[in-house]
Image (cartoon, rainbow, N blue to C red; front, side, top):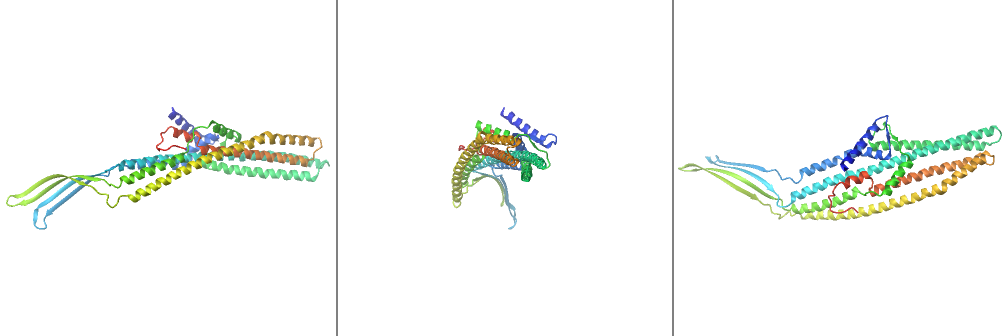
Length: 435
């Protein structure tokens, strides 16, 4: 069932990539953008070859050395005894005395697991990168839209000020201020649009798309942040591939230490030899003897006991254990900091929605009504509208910060389904546990 779901996810992602490549249907939500990036990111595709390299090293490790076929022949032609000679043929095989080959295979097996975790950690970072770019792009577009609306309002007020001047009711300062305000919002809107295009190009790169490809982001900033908030509230399974990678590195160091100890005995060399001996025995003539024997060679660990290599590997094991403890603390503090940041920004967002926004909306309505009744100058109305627009753009910044904080929390905790789900379907190879 899980495999069918995984195949379904891959199919959906492939469909998303095809949709992006098709100029008639280039639209992605944030989650579909994540799935498309996992399938199409060029750097991630290249990183996955590290797994194949590690698997190749695993297939090569733990093999016996090739046997040796040896020939020896001697003849007595130097001293004139041409009929005398010795011919020997032997087959020799080196055999380990310790578990050196199985330990070498264990090291390579851990190497495969490390390569898988490295790829998964790249996927975790890529997911956070795509989500961040998606949110920042939509926030920039929202600021662009708010700037356009504020420019439209300023343009209307500038036209009204011009009509009032023509009727002898307004002042040049009102008209000038309205025109300046219109140009100010034009510049801010243009700047936001430029930023959005730059971010969209970075997102295309993350998705593995060329710059000229059509890409439409269908999910609004509010919807994307809500999706992240709901996933954070659901508190799914947590998995950090980099912590798993550090634990596997610790296992590798232990296996390498045991391998160094086992390598002190290089192994025994066993062979079977056949020898034919021809000699002249006067007056009987040529005598030929055939012999079959066994040859055993045992190297002794007298000078090279691998002591230095063992000490170096033991030090590496202690170093990696210290690195695991440091990483565990860093991850725990990172998750706590991300949660605290989310909590503070959510509080700021609630204060804005409950207290700030209603006040500025009511103030603008009162000023507009006063302006229509002739009790408020156009300059004052323009000032209040400008402040209202500025606060709306600030609210967009608060929403953007909240989305980025939720992305940081999800990445720090490793709770995105695309990161955690493959790990939960496997049996961990390391002996330690995740923090």
